[in-house]
Image 1 (tube, rainbow, N blue to C red):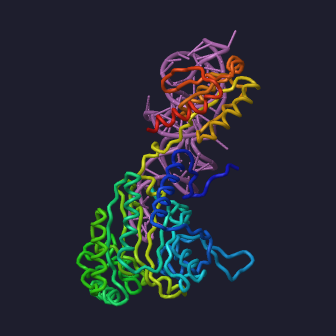
Image 2 (cartoon, rainbow, N blue to C red; image 1 turned 45 degrees about the horizontal axis):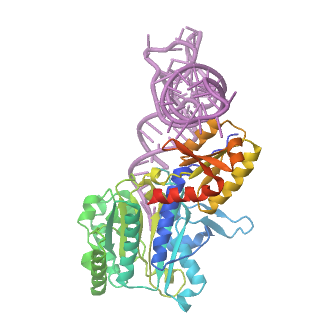
Image 3 (cartoon, rainbow, N blue to C red; image 1 turned 45 degrees about the vertical axis):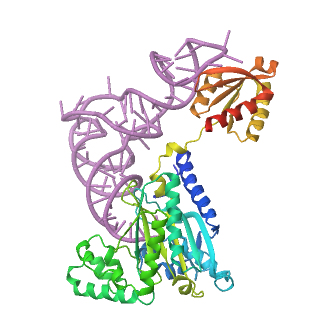
Amino acid sequence: MQPRRLRGFQDIAGAQARTLAAVEDCARAIAERHNVSEIRIPALERLDLFQHSSGETSDIVEKQMYAFVDRDEAETTLALRPEGTPGVVRAYIEAGMDRSEPEQRFYYVGPMFRRERPQKGRFRQFSQFGVEIFGRADAATDAELMIMVDELRRELGLELNFEINSLGDGECRPRFRQAVLEYGRAHLGELCEDCRNRLERNPLRLLDCKIDVKLAESAPRSQDYLCEHCRAHFATVRELLADAGVAHTVNPRLVRGLDYYTRTTFEAISIAVGAQSAVAAGGRYDGLVEALGGAPVAGTGFAIGVDRLALALDAARFAAHADAAIAALGDAALRRAMSLATALRGRGLRVEVLAPGRGLKALMRRADRIGARYAVIIGDDELARGAVTLRDLAASTQTEVAERDLAATLAAARAAARA
RNA sequence: GUGAGUGUAGCUCAGUUGGCAGAGCAUCGGGUUGUGGCCCCGGCGGUCGAGGGUUCAAGUCCCUUCACUCACCCCA
């Protein structure tokens, strides 16, 4: 039996793995600069956590969850997390932070699981990097989230389009929802089947329906229903974004269906990754902490699809190159090679000691294959002189270098190459 | 869940009206006793996705099935 990976799951190695790591490292560094700290939470939770936070009628909960009954506790159904926010909110409430110290700034990174049909930029296990900020209801926090995503865009050299919208708050959002509901009822006969089915329980989804585009265009707009506070909040967010140089467009059809989503909502869209083009999305969820049993604390956050974002990057940029490949000819040379390699690694150099017992020709080919900048050759002649042959593989030149000078020589060469 | 496309060597693919299973790359070795890339020679490598049918003969035609890819759907 030939073992095969599961559908929609990936084995990732080489430059692709380094690309994902680069995205995650870059996002971490940005979060830390914004004084956001890591929270590590479980990949497995009780199913009802996701049902209560993502909504029992959402597709994610209804048909995309990896859920199963815990083997010894038949009354407990568990699920692999399909997103990060519910777990972070659960942890926040469980630690009592909503009461003791409500203002918290968290980021998380790790695998999420959804049993969807795979396609470009969509896998059943995928990595998300997310930020959740609690206890801040101000517009500056909403803007800061998008500024963080924009910093990531800049540092990775990506093109992203930001779309934003405001859904209103507890005061004005219900009026808007009611207006969309009545609009939908008035055009019931023209709606697609999906929209008709979910109209009563989730009318806002009509607005981002791709079938009923025409109807959505002339549907009520959240902008027209915002109360004074929400209008001011949204204006401030846009002002702060403009100040920070974050280009964005207002998309009145950008919505979230669930009631605890409030005010600002946004997506960052890439033109380079196929149909699954939203590489980051987020917004304000002032009702969520309370909905999960905590105190009424404001919350806002975003998540980045790491795999999706990496698709927009050229993996070759992140390929690994060894600084030195050491070819040892003979047992005595091998022992010398091992200790020299340790010294080089001590200076932070990337070093591979090549397979002993093979011909120099094969070893040189390996050195070339792994992209090594230098080959270090140690044979009987070099051993006798306490030296090594140092070959510059790009220039095809070589010199003899004393063993004790090797580390300094290579470290200097690398520093020069980086300058 | 729905639709379309594609399955032949490790990878990328060719394979004509049905007639011996192929190429390039990769890998290993040789040309060069201690020198990579370029070049030349050679070795290894196949259940043609799987099962059934038609035929003297099927990679090729038919049926079934599985997998992969992209899109729909959905989505931080």
